[in-house]
Length: 225
Image (cartoon, rainbow, N blue to C red; front, top):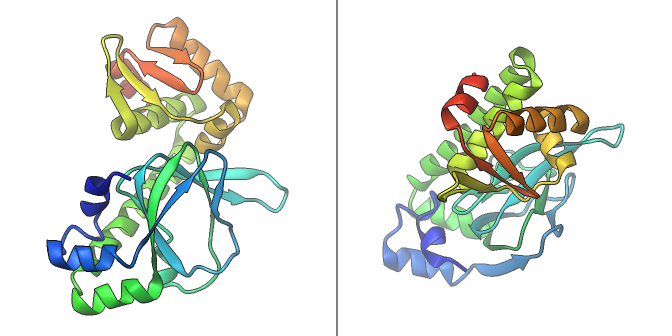
């Protein structure tokens, strides 16, 4: 568990070291393997999670059985906080995309933090606002952008959050299957694969299984507008 990442998460950043340790002692550390479900859409929302390492996908299942990826979350990000403000069933299914370490906090424990430090709620709201902003951007992209543009934008976003600089370019280990990447941009796998093949042939990126090396950031950025 990367305690530094957990300590600097929005939920805890405003707490003193003493207060943080008091809260941390009441939290349980969990590890999930790739493909393991953290919580399921429709289940009772009774706890919040902070990611210490790894990646988590949030997915929504349509009535016809198709899955749509709502977001990819990484270290320092929070999930499960929506039910704090709107008690009720989970609105999405959270699944580990890679080996993921996190800590969980019951809602009762969270309410105790908010009673002692009300300003923490501002950081939780900021986290929700950021996710809402991403959702709004995604909806706008579905309306106004073509599939190659959405693919470029999605890869750049993943690169900013999970990328690692190498001699070849920005390596992004996204841990997504081709089908999951297609779900993330709201397109068919065939259309997404065609866009990736085009970018690769132009020398803008290099495909490596469940990772990609972004070579020409400027052209990808222009294509994603």
